[in-house]
Length: 471
Image 1 (cartoon, helix red, strand yellow):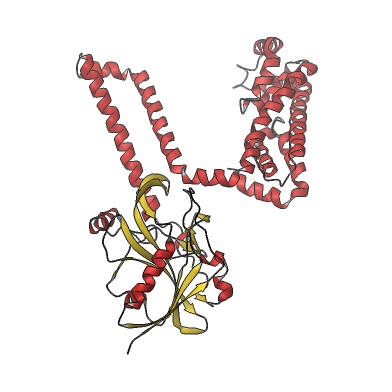
Image 2 (cartoon, helix red, strand yellow):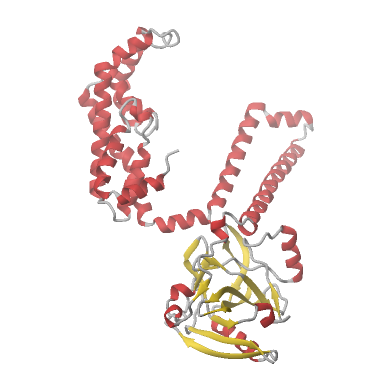
């Protein structure tokens, strides 16, 4: 099947030829014979999407589409007028087709086009494959060309115009539309499945007189019949919903996807300096499928030759990570019981966090949790650099997360408070020697009153700590 995205990419990189390609697509879309292999919708949408993105000129796109459409229809018309009747007679000699392609049927077709031909030309443009053959048939049955053109031209404008409008506005808002589409993809699929199911059930009821069968089989009592029917639909809908949400749970939280999704490791060594820390892009964390939506920044850096469990001791509980580890539904229920819910899988520079911990206070609603990205120090390969992102879960809220409406933690927007909490925690540890300082970066985010969509605010300081064991 022809894919739209590669074609858009091709047009984007060959803009000089793009108008000619779009014209040819619009032209051959209704030229009889070729039209079976050329899908005009692909050309109409691709061209108008690029116009909406200001890559192509919208007026030139409209011109080549309409010109190609009218010329293509006219070509089919004249091919039908010159060769159509000969083709009709030739095919009429075929043993299997002569029953349909005979003089009587030709006369019926001719009478039909004399009476309704002009309307057929107009409405065929909106009927998919019928639009491919109607201009050819109009030529075969000798519809007046002037009449053909009068009704074909507005049909081309409206028929192609609908794709231009959709594609153009999709091009303007394509990022928003793509995000919405992928965010709610499974909701859309679920609703379509439900609608399809009830449509098929309706057909089944209509064909087999299902309600009448129920009446004969169970009871003649209308009340019981209604109750039985309601129970049936409740059972079916409930079953579909349960299966749907189990599937979503697996897909959203358990399924790891391709290796490119969770195992992007690039260069796991790092040279830490002011240039690196002042590049806010290096400090942003995000969901893999939405890198432009920043969840929270890196706000802690640990330089040490010790591992994280040694530093955190038993005061922090290791968290499972959704969509990174093979986390079964049973394990999820155990986490729920232990009040140690898994954390979301976040990425920094296309690398997912290595580990996540929450402070020992067990609570489903309120907790301090921190994620760590582990790197090797380029200046000292025996030394580890841990980039950390800490925040505080402060209650629950209901939002769309990974395709469906669910209760998720409400993160405290004041992430500096959590950073400072971790600093105080390190200072209290007796088994480690801590040398910490705050580094001011250019990545400040001010608190905005009334901005519900604001993820966090910060003074832009990073807590940098060098940690060694006390002797």
